[in-house]
Length: 234
Ligand SMILES: CC(C)(COP(=O)(O)OP(=O)(O)OC[C@H]1O[C@@H](n2cnc3c(N)ncnc32)[C@H](O)[C@@H]1OP(=O)(O)O)[C@@H](O)C(=O)NCCC(=O)NCCS
Image 1: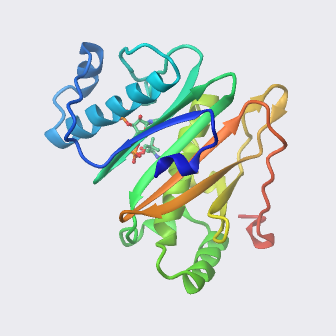
Image 2 (image 1 turned 90 degrees about the horizontal axis):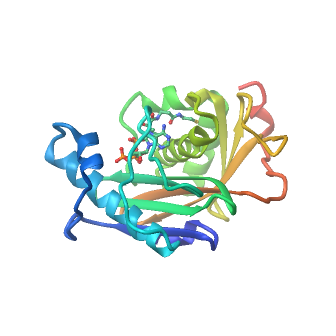
């Protein structure tokens, strides 16, 4: 189902369990240290998805190591992102000449634990979610917001190598188009002399999961981010 979130040129592979063998390279095993079985399984299956996705781009198999902030290190000329949650693992990759950055995140389609929404959403975002909840009660909008912001971070980080807090992006959803726009409230990455003011993405619901995806095209029209009027000053 992940393919629906990304344009052509992005290779996406997903798994719903850890049934298929997913051998790791020594460099990858070293990243795991003494991790518990659950962590080893999600890591190994997501690495397998990533290798399959890289294969679709024509890249030979090899270890996918990680940087100091856990960001995956892709082969030269490739960008990508990884996600995993209970019952789901996925990886997306693309040629860096075609896409500057990718973001992906999956979450169970259930409510966020008590107290989390207040730490990840500003007042205007909470108002926006309340309206969406009334119109589309089957969607856990609070969890979708969390997922969209995690996807934003995964696209943001390789471009900036900087932290981005939850209050440094304001997200609005379009329920009919199943899209979202994230307006950056911190200085954006400068790409080709132009500052990126935000990210746009897509989301889907299926098999009890919410999945969000962002693809930043290398040659793209200006990002259209239409903030709600009351998001200004967040
Ligand atoms: C990095 C972060 C987004 C990962 O989220 P998570 O809850 O572990 O979720 P997922 O399982 O979906 O993703 C994990 C994968 O993200 C990738 N990842 C981790 N850190 C990353 C980073 N700095 N940049 C890009 N990708 C990263 C890794 O591939 C990791 O899997 P792996 O360790 O098996 O390789 C999260 O831990 C975090 O730090 N969030 C706070 C920052 C944030 O979200 N700000 C909001 C900005 S609006």
